Image (cartoon, rainbow, N blue to C red; front, side, top):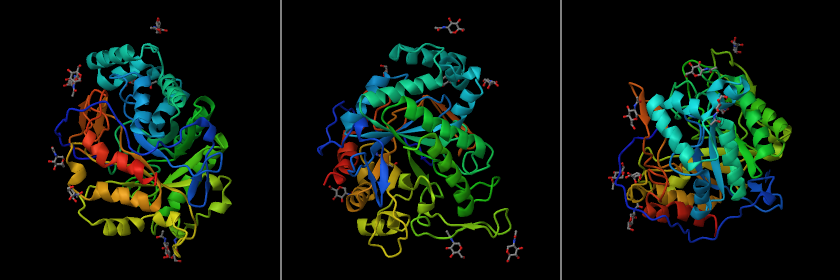
Amino acid sequence: MLFNIFVPGLLLSSLASASPSASRPKRAASILPLSTKGRDIIDANGDVFHFVSTNWPGHQEIMIPEGLQHSSIQDIVAWFPKFGLNSVRLTFAIEMIDDYLANSPNQTLEKSVINALGQSNGTKVLNQILSYNPQFTKNTTRLQVWDAVGKELSKQGVIIHLDNHVSKAFWCCADDDGNGWFGEKFFGVESWKRGLAFMAKHAKENWPTYSSIGLRNELRPAKVSEPVDWYTWYVHMTAAADAVHKADPDSLIFFSGLAYDTYIDPIPLGKTLNGTAGKSSANKTAKFVPGEFAYKDKIVLEIHKYDFEATQDDCATFKRKWYQKGFQAINPADPATKYLFPLVISEWGFIHNGTYWNQTTYAKCLVEMVKEYQVSWQHWELSGSFYLQTRPGRKPLETIIAGEEFWGLLDYNWTAIRSPITLENSLYKMIGALNG
Ligand SMILES: *[C@@H]1O[C@H](CO)[C@@H](O)[C@H](O)[C@H]1NC(C)=O
Ligand SMILES: *[C@@H]1O[C@H](CO)[C@@H](O)[C@H](O)[C@H]1NC(C)=O
Ligand SMILES: *[C@@H]1O[C@H](CO)[C@@H](O)[C@H](O)[C@H]1NC(C)=O
Ligand SMILES: *[C@@H]1O[C@H](CO)[C@@H](O)[C@H](O)[C@H]1NC(C)=O
Ligand SMILES: *[C@@H]1O[C@H](CO)[C@@H](O)[C@H](O)[C@H]1NC(C)=O
Ligand SMILES: *[C@@H]1O[C@H](CO)[C@@H](O)[C@H](O)[C@H]1NC(C)=O
Ligand SMILES: *[C@@H]1O[C@H](CO)[C@@H](O)[C@H](O)[C@H]1NC(C)=O
Ligand SMILES: *[C@@H]1O[C@H](CO)[C@@H](O)[C@H](O)[C@H]1NC(C)=O
C-alpha cells in the first residue's frame, strides 16, 4: 500500500474471539484449480468463488512472513478460519528469489534477521522466532520458512494468493522509491519475470492450496524508468503472464492497474493502449484482447481502494465514482464494457483504532459496493507489528524497528484482535456482503 500516516491510536483491550455472523466461505484444496468465466472466478466444480482474504506481508527486509517473533506459524494461520477468511494475499519480494538463485549465503534466518536489524536486535529477534517456531534453526533459509508457511496454510485449508509486492525488499510504496515502474532502479524486468515464474512453480509444487499470483503491486510513476504508459504496461505484463502460465498453467494471474492500482478501466473498455510522445514508446499502440492469450481463462483484474481523502461522500456518489475506475469489467449490462473479467479489490483498509470506521463513509460504502457488485476482496492487513519497516517516502529515510501496525487485524503481539468493534462494523460486514 501507499504508505499511510502513522497515527498512534487508542489500544482497546480485546478478546481473542472472532465470530463473523455470516456463513463461512468454502475452504478446500479440492476446489482448485480456479479459472474464470466472464465476470466470475469459478472453482473446479464450476461454482463461483470469491477471495475473502487479508494480506499477510512477507516482502519487507527480512523477506519472510511477518509475525514469527510473536507467534508460531500454526497459531497465525489459525486466525484465518477464526476471522471467517478463506484465503490469504501473501506478499513477497523478487530479491528473495534473486538471492536463492544466486545461492547467496544471506538467506539463512540468522543472516536475514541480523542483516536487517543489526547484531544485537537481530539476535534477540532471531531467538524469539526460534522460540515460537522451534522447527527452525538459525540455518533455516527464507524459502524453507515460506514452505513451512505455505504448507501450514494448506493444512488449515486457506487458499494462497501470492503477490509480487516489490523487487527490493522494503515497505511499499512511494513515488520514485526504485520499485515502482519497469526499469526503475530496483525493478529489473528480467529478474522480475524470472522471480514470478519461480514462485508460481514452487508454490504449485509444494503448497496444495496455492491458487494464484499477482504480477505486481501498485505500479506507479517514476522519473527514471521505461516510459510510464499503458503500452509499456501491456508489453511487460503480458510477457510476465506468459512466464507464469508456462511455469504453472493452473494459476490465476492478477493484473493491476496504474497510479497505485487505483484504476484499470482501459482494459475492460478495450481501449487502445498508447505509448508516450517523445519517449521510446512513441507512436506505439497495443490492445489487450483476452482471447489472444493462452491464459485467457486465468485473467483477473485487481484494484485498490484506500480512504486517504477521508471521504464523506454518500454511498451512491462513492459507488458511482469508483465504478468508473474498473468495475465495468464485471458488469455485462454496461454498454461500454468490451471484455468481462473478474475484479478483485486486492487492498482496502484503514486504522483499527475503534472510531475511524465511523468517521468517514468509506467503511460503510465499501460494504455496499461489494454487496452490489459481488466482488472478491483482500483486506490490508493481518500484521499487528513488523520486524522492521523502511519508509521510503520520509525524509530523512525513516527506519522503524518493531513498529506497530495500527491498521492490523491483530494487536502488537499478534495474540488478540486489535479492535473488535472495527471488525464488527467492517471486516465481518464485508464477509456478510458476499453471503447474501
Ligand atoms: C482514530 O484515527 C482517526 C484518524 O487518524 C482519528 O481522527 C481518531 O481520533 C482516532 N481515534 C482514536 C480513538 O484515537
Ligand atoms: C550479504 O549481506 C551483506 C550484508 O548486507 C552484504 O554486504 C553482502 O554483499 C551480501 N552477500 C551477498 C552474496 O549477497
Ligand atoms: C534496537 O531496537 C530498538 C527498538 O526496539 C531501537 O530503539 C534501537 O535503536 C535498535 N538498536 C540498533 C542498534 O539498531
Ligand atoms: C549451522 O550451520 C553451521 C555451518 O554449516 C554449522 O556449523 C552449525 O552446526 C549449524 N547450526 C545449526 C543449529 O544447525
Ligand atoms: C490512446 O489514444 C487514443 C487516441 O488518442 C485514445 O482514444 C485512447 O483513449 C487512448 N488510450 C488510453 C488508455 O488513454
Ligand atoms: C510519431 O508520429 C509522428 C506523427 O506521425 C511523427 O512525426 C514522429 O516522428 C513519430 N515518432 C517516432 C518516434 O516514430
Ligand atoms: C456513525 O454512526 C452513527 C450511529 O450509528 C450513524 O448514524 C452514522 O451514519 C455513522 N457515520 C458513518 C460515517 O458511518
Ligand atoms: C506484548 O507482550 C509483552 C510481553 O508479554 C508485554 O510486555 C507488552 O505489554 C505487550 N504489548 C501489547 C501492546 O500488548
